[in-house]
Image 1 (cartoon, rainbow, N blue to C red):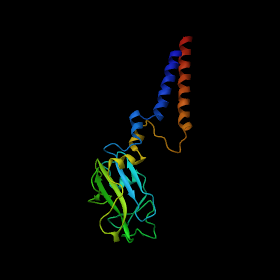
Image 2: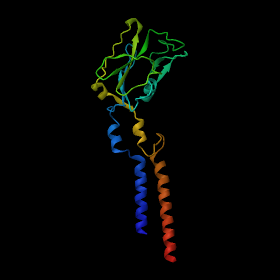
Image 3: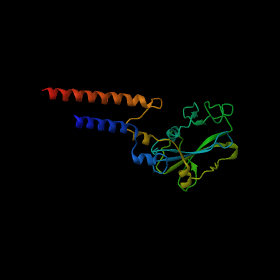
Length: 216
């Protein structure tokens, strides 16, 4: 009986541990942007109100540029044309500055640039919706005034230092390492309670079986 109860207790502890604990490798990688499939995202507001940031889309190689922006939790808005363009990021420019209608009507636009490490930034060959991010890519979004010409100056270089400074805001690979993914609104007690009930039922069944065996 004691042996059986010990095995049940051990199994219960292992199952509860699997719910909350990621693997050691995932815990180490969660805060870094070092993997070849991780994509640094440079966001520079130019003349707009907004805080320049360097973000990291974890394991985003193979995604489109627009999917990468979504992965780092940037809010975007597009024009309504058949070939839409991203016209607003994080609420900038404001609706007074850019209507985001069928076409751009403001004084500038969000320039989409790409680069490999230690190379110069350059315009992407296609738009955010079509561009497939490759391993080793850096991407930049810079609000650029059309009056300033075609050349877009990005302050942050595509460098190892920029990659190291990238802020990890989304990590689906890390979350997938968890045996059970908890909803942000689900308290821990709501998960632990069913496990405790199941463990108690197992112990009760074991006691019943052992008792019957002794009487037999």
